[in-house]
Length: 286
Image 1 (cartoon, rainbow, N blue to C red):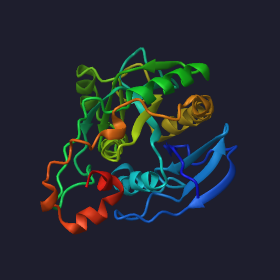
Image 2 (image 1 turned 90 degrees about the vertical axis):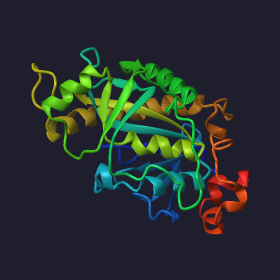
Image 3 (image 1 turned 180 degrees about the vertical axis):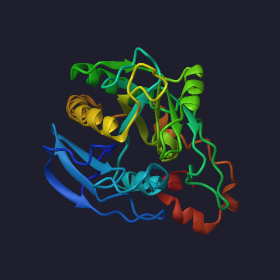
């Protein structure tokens, strides 16, 4: 099987991509368990793509239960160097309307119950994370969204909450005061783990609602989110088609060497079991 350099993590409503040719299905086994679903590899716009629906087909896995380490590790094992995350979210700003798209450039982590690193058990690494989304891939994604005809906003902070419940009005009003752009449940720990795996990561944040802060809008319901998101899914697929042919073969960002100076543990002190477990990630630095 040839290496696939581009991966897509599908969010709510995006469980498959029509038009893929030369399809093969890979059921990956990782040191961190099974991924959310089998990875579908196919050709779209002349580019090989690995597609993984993060919630599983049929939306079986809630945000806190997502096997994110297994998902990222599985994509890494296939050769993926760039991940495009398609994610449902709520708007925290008046000017970002439902059905808009945001390409965030910052993250605020409000989760509390999710494993967020591949490391530990005798192997310590501290990655730089001041730019949690790959600037290069985010710019490409923004240009592709414009080309696809989306109303798209470049930049802004993605606030990631634990869920699965939506925000209270009190929480939503306070989050607004923090100046965040959108609120969602899946960018953490995906962005952290992708960086540890030296994979570029960018998010196509699909706005489904105004959260619950907007007094003139109807209350947020699952029905509203799904209704709006299904309209956004078609746009997300157009954006992907515009993006793929324009993605350069080589990366010019720092994501590819994120672990170069991040491994703090002295090499002779690293347990053999961890060297073997994380060989895919750290082998070239050992």
